[in-house]
Amino acid sequence: MNEPNATPGQIVKAAYKTGEYIAEVVESDGRRVLVQVHAVLQHPTQGDLHHPYDPDAPMFHERRASAFGEKVWVPAAAVKPYDGAIPPYKETLMTALGTEMERMDRLQRWAQRSLERLRSLEKDYKG
Image 1 (cartoon, rainbow, N blue to C red):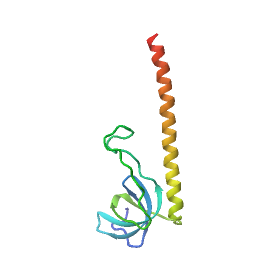
Image 2: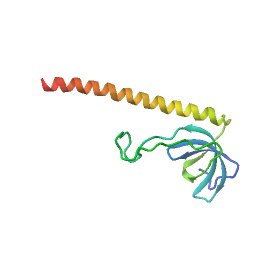
Image 3: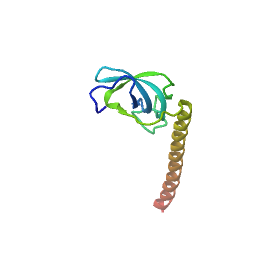
């Protein structure tokens, strides 16, 4: 955060394990902040983070969003002040999940169209 220490009770945006949340600061030790999750802004990314977009990665991880009320330690740099109303957890969870699913669907359609174009080019290149 911009401030030296997050203040207990402060509402923040916190990035945690590829997800982003609206959370309340519980405590801080200066380099880490313990936050309690209240809403989901971005659903965590699936798969192997060391091999992004590789469907054949040896460890394809399923990442669940942090639960309502779950307390997690995050680096202080991953915490930013949040101003605004806190929407209901379940509503934000479903919205974030839907957004991530739409993003994956769009990526899948892009890959399919790219593959079609590459196959067309392959025919052209072969003569």
